[in-house]
Length: 86
Image (cartoon, rainbow, N blue to C red; front, side, top):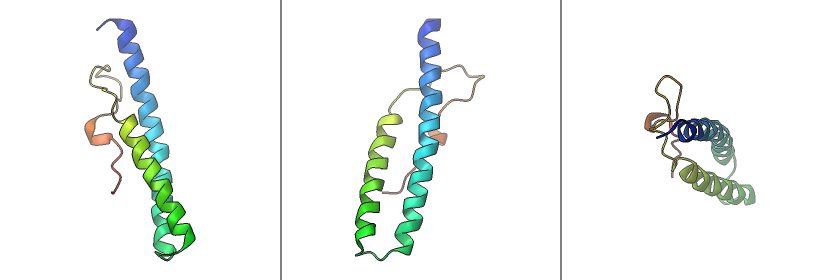
């Protein structure tokens, strides 16, 4: 892989990591709010919709192959990918 592709891959991996951090925060707050709201409340339905969208986005973001990024730089690896409950 040439240097330009490697640089692009590193940039994508950094972006994926940053996006996953934000999605993790959103999912965490949604889960906390779901615990506080009743299961049949209108807010629970909306929070569940948000979680569904967060799961979908996380799947798409984590689909990028980051194994070609430089080993000396922090990259998104399988262990660091956002794990969301289903």
